[in-house]
Amino acid sequence: MYPGTWAKERPEHPATIMTGGPLDGRVQTYGELDERSIRLARVFAEAGLTRGDHVAVVLENRPEVFEAYWAAVRSGLIVTAVNSHLTPAEVAYIVDDCEAQVLVVSANLPGIAEGVVADTPRVRRRLAVGGAIPGHEDYEAALAAVSADPLDDEPAGMDMLYSSGTTGRPKGITRELPERRVDEPGDGMLEIFAPVYGFDRDTVYYSPAPQYHSAPLRFGSMTHAVGGTLVIAERFRPEQALADIEKYRVTHSQWVPTMFVRLLKLDDEVRARYDLSSLKVAVHAAAPCPVEVKRRMIEWWGPVLQEYYSSTESPGQTRITSEEWLEHPGSVGRATVGILHICGEDGKEVGPGEVGTVYFETDRPLFVYHHDEDKTADSRHPDHPNWATTGDLGYVDEDGWLYLTDRKAFMIISGGVNIYPQEIEDALALHPAVRDVGVIGIPDEEMGEQVKAVVETAEGAVPGPELEKEILEFVRGRIAHYKCPRSVDFTDSLPRTPTGKLVKRRIVERYR
Image (cartoon, rainbow, N blue to C red; front, side):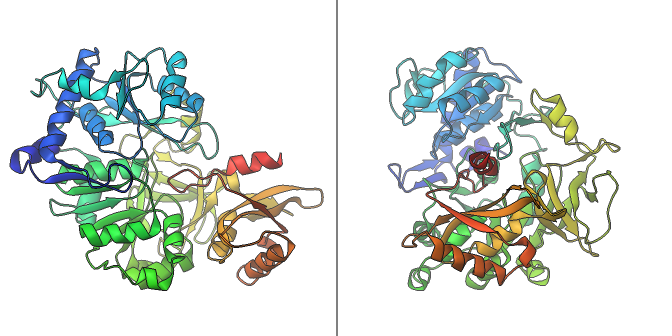
């Protein structure tokens, strides 16, 4: 299924609703989404793009993200949504690396649009959305100049998204292009997620995260594929999110743990003000959720939280319901796609409770890192080419429930002991003076590395020796003392992607 199906069945049904910002309240029907994606598909075809060619999109949260997505996917093209918060040089690298021949960019990002021109020579057409940019065609004029009749052939395309670059330069993650038409079965999102979470034509899906990220883009497109309504927030605002759930009678939503933390820090009176009874499923993923944070969210929202562990690469997947999590607090579930393996440094599988690299065994075609054979090879098990990893560390218990500890690249070795920063960050997340925290290892002559916490303080908190002492005492009451930070530094802000992932390499670079 795709928007064309629903444009025929119920053309006036809302496909997308915007909330917050200058586009607040804008509704796009299925009839409009279908027609505009057809017209854009013709623009791509007129630019000479054929099956397997690439387009890139650099937009803030707005309906045109999905117009471009569906235009590409119904044309056999590969679409790359680019982080709109990157610098022009970073955007240019991705646009050029993915070999995009058409670039769709927001007029609210003129510095990026004009700043990437010299370094993106493959781009044939540059379309400006929402206003004028020198050297760019007007998006609306380009759509108006072509027919609204579908192309004669509509082979299925796909996305090729880039890693967030939390441990290095981002890499495109790709697979073989599907051999089917866009309206034929075979969409992995529909087959895996829609039945499990109950996505259908009555779904109202709330998406408060940036649409260039894999989960918002793919869950949003899945909502369109089943004929539901996608409610896109301009950006995440804690109280506004609660108001949106009540106003639009949201049935499904997706979050990251940092959003939960900020929701829980709202005053009790504010949290009690809104009717959230329409929520059937609140999915969360992208980053591990602190145990106490998740427990409090379940107490507040009820057993609607559904967690999955996967990645943009998606070699496999685990899932866990609220009820299962209450029995196995801290787990991210059992394998539901692929077979889970935990392997030590020598590549051999380790026993229950032992930490190792998380691999998924699969009989499906595996991902490839675009233009990076070495990184692709590093993601495969040395003895099992159909086992893949994204570098996460974890362990399973006797019953196969997976517990993540951290990324391999972030592990701290102090006095020969492995320390996982995530556990320490989780312990500090709900301290009232802590708005955000990152834990890293810094050089230590005696121990090799020592643990340091870098804290972004909450409004009203006063950084200094007294607060440092309070934070250290707080964490010592929650985890083993050998894991506790030796010191705390305070900062105005920590580098996170808008999807909630801590860009730890940037913190480490400050201390090098």
